[in-house]
Amino acid sequence: MSILAAIRDAFDLLLAGDAELLEIIAVSLKTSLIALALAAPCAIAAGYLIAQHAFPGRRIAIWLAQAAMAMPTVLIGLLLYLTLSRQGPLGELEWLFSQSGIIVGQMLIALPVLVAFSLTAIQAIDPRLAETAITLGASRLAVMRTVLHEVRFGVMAALISGFGRVIAEVGCALMVGGNIKGETRTITTAIALETSKGEFAQGIALGMVLVAIALLINAVLVWLQGDTRMARGWS
Image (tube, rainbow, N blue to C red; front, side):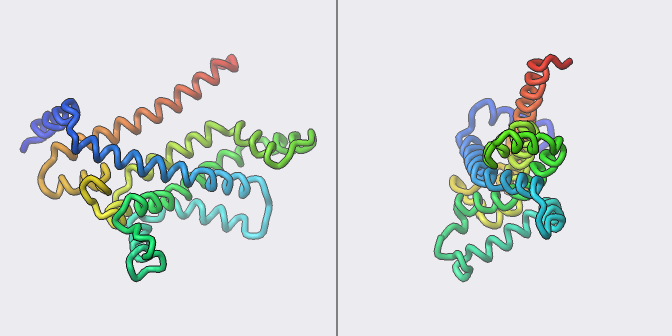
C-alpha cells in the first residue's frame, strides 16, 4: 500500500467513526486521564514541599525527581510486570493485563514529570509571596493555595506535559496491558501492532488523533494564558 493510499484510508476511518478506532481512543483517554487525576495531587504537593521547605537531602530529592523523567518507560513496565505477575508481591491484585495495571504504570510515569515541572514553577516565584502570606496570618494550607494559584499556569503546563507523556508512551502499556483488544489496547500499542502487520491506515489514523490531542490541549493552555494577560491589561 502506498503512503497516499494509507493516508486516504486513515481519513476514511476517522470520518466514518470506525468503532474499533473509537474503542482504542476511549481506552487511551480513560486510562491516561484517571492516571493523571490520581497522580497529580500527590505530585504537585510534593513539588510544593520540596520547593518551599529546606530539609536534609533536598538536593538529592530534586535530582531524583529530574532524573526520573528520563527513566525508560519500558523499564518501568518491566518492574511493574514483575511486581504484578502471579509470583510478584502484588500478584493477588490480578492487575496484570488490565486497565488497572496500565493506570498504575502511567501514574509512575507521570509522577516525576508533575513533580519536576511543579517544583520548577514554584521555585521561580518571589519567595516574599509566601512570607507575606505567613506574616498576614495565613495558615499553611492557605499559603499553599496562594502559591499554587500564582503558578497555576506552570502547574497547567506540568499537567499537560504529564498527560502527553502517558498517552504517548508504549513500552509500559504494552508490557503491563498486553495489548488486549477492547480492554488494554491503547493508541500507541495499536499503532505498534498495526505497523508490524503492515496495516498502516489505522496506525496513521491513530497517529493523527495523538497529534490532534496534543494540539488541542496546548491550544487551551495558550488561550487561557492569553486571556489572563488581557484581563490584567497586558499586551
